[in-house]
Length: 100
Image (tube, rainbow, N blue to C red; front, top):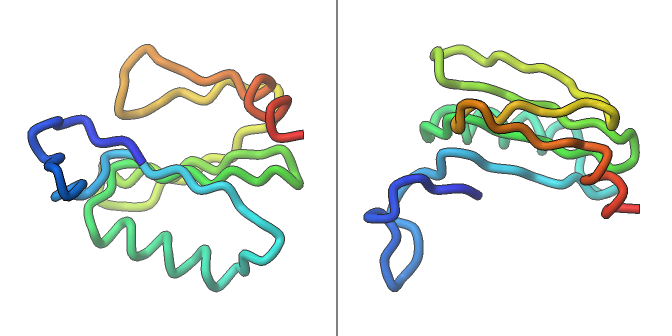
């Protein structure tokens, strides 16, 4: 999870909704769980939610900033733009190399 406003983090932890949440799927994750989390994160006010699928070497990016779910799937050869940080991207070839 990424929180951009340091003033919302206290000694007890986060007191806010994260700006970016990244989840790495495991074989036990179900489609129902993923759909529930997607709705929970959107309703909570998370700006961006990433689902990393190491089995298929993809990352699904869900951007909630417009009030609707805008999802895009990136492959291992892509660079994912980080919506909450303009002009910043993450090269997935390096990410998936670490997960192997």
